[in-house]
Amino acid sequence: MLYVVKKLNLGCGKEYRDGWVNLDISNKDIYDNEIKVDVKHDLNKFPWPFKSNEFDFVLLKHLLEHLDDIPKVMNELIRITRKGGIIKIIVPHFSCYHTYRDPTHKIFPSIQTINYIKKNSDVVSSKLRVSHNRFLNMFSPFINKFPVIYERFFYGFFPVQEIIWILRVNK
Image (cartoon, rainbow, N blue to C red; front, side, top):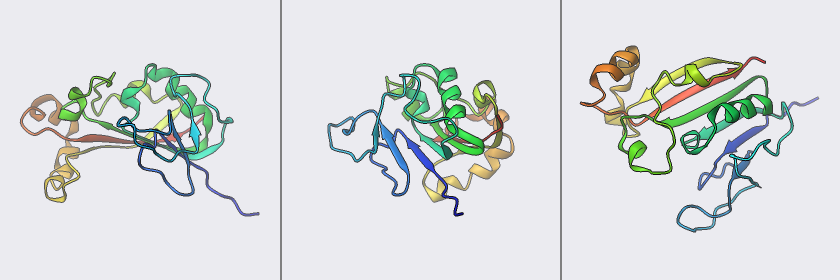
């Protein structure tokens, strides 16, 4: 029997992924442009419209910071992801100007925020990304050797763009 990996793209926006289940709150983006979605649902409404243990991989890219109740969100993520499944969360870092300029952001995460919200999952990876620019991103490995020291003393001199967390569900 062939096993098909089922992947979920939460808050897909303009980044529709073929072969995935793509969910967003609407079929329009914030500029009222049409976007392609498979499932329309407000992720602040629980439970989400998925079966328990339905997905092998769940992606939240620049979404978590917009949601109202992070503990409930994490409970739903664990519920819909199978044991051993992967949840990848990408959020803007608190030092990035995108984080504090957007009035819809409800949290301003640091590298350690995941330790408070990771319910029933193990942190496989926790990384800071300086930039999507390849030249600037060459500083990411150094910053990731000492992320807590970076956040405590150097974030004001050299802000980073985002945090990438990868979790493995261990229910």
